[in-house]
Length: 463
Ligand code: ARG
Image (tube, rainbow, N blue to C red):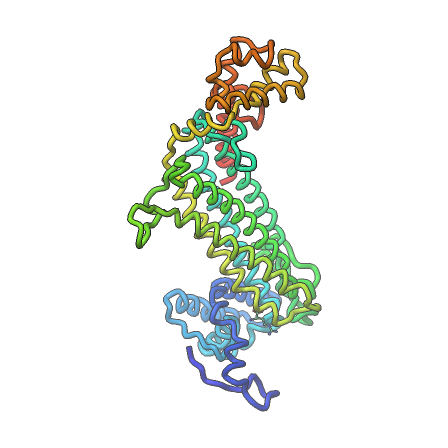
């Protein structure tokens, strides 16, 4: 970058110090907005020409200059200057160097305040579209894995204590549902992101006969920000996006926590493909689930960005304040981290190897079918509270004997209730337990197969 110092304008008696220049500049990160900045400028200039605010020749020159600049940026030949503070002034200065006075006319009826708000909205809109499609790829990977495991039994937990048997597919489909809501949230957030601030100018609008609708249409916005002060100052749409991103990361962090746990040799439910793990520099036997651990760790960073933006906004008087320049780094990092995470996750889920036998063995421990025994008694006329107590005593007995409920003899079980009969043994099996939960949302294999079919259908309708 070129660091030559000059005064801001004729109104200033001295240039800023080098430190202040560095402190106030944003070009080091907002150059990421360049494509959107050019897109916005083209729409603005086209409108200025259509409204006869600038001449057609000026527009043609601006268009030519901006496409040249776009090429320079794409090819890495554009020279960014810290002295020119931000992406907007860098591009405008270069435009003027290429096309002369026409370049100086581009900023008519516009301010960097509505310009930057436009750029961020265009950037976020594209990010949301990419994120939505990445979530859907992950959802597809989850369904593909679930499809093979509707009969694979694992212990379902509450308080991380074995509770009731569930299928591995049912467990995976819980995450599918979370991600489905995440997609809905992103779609909803997009509506508020996709509104055009252009025309608000610095804060009060402009005295030129502009056509805001034309610009909005040109840039494929759904509508127009209807108050100029609000248009340039609020970043609630970015905060909302970060909140949605935090929830996605939170869901993935929970799944990561489970993958880590399931991969621990003492649990051993799954293994992850080697390409998602690393070894230890000292313990040769180790295979560490680094990727899920990092997802869990990066969730903290994304939550931090949300809090940063909320704090950035909370005490700002209307309208634009330079504070808002600080919105970009957290926002960019949120988008980059989230897209990387989603991409890596979809790939990681396709490489999950399931150890069905270990899952089954774990489900057999911890009396996971105790509730099934209670339900059996209730169906025979025993009030639920009494059934609960009968089962509690049976469990205590089996525990002392060191076996599962299903391993007890009929006469042993009958000590606790005369209602228990030979048909109890089909109830106490994992398969029987699973199959009995046969209603919408239950873990019965047929229900989970239906849920998977609905999920697939929903995904294909919503590409
Ligand atoms: N770099 C600035 C930002 O990111 C652009 C807007 C500057 N506006 C101003 N009045 N200084 O917010």
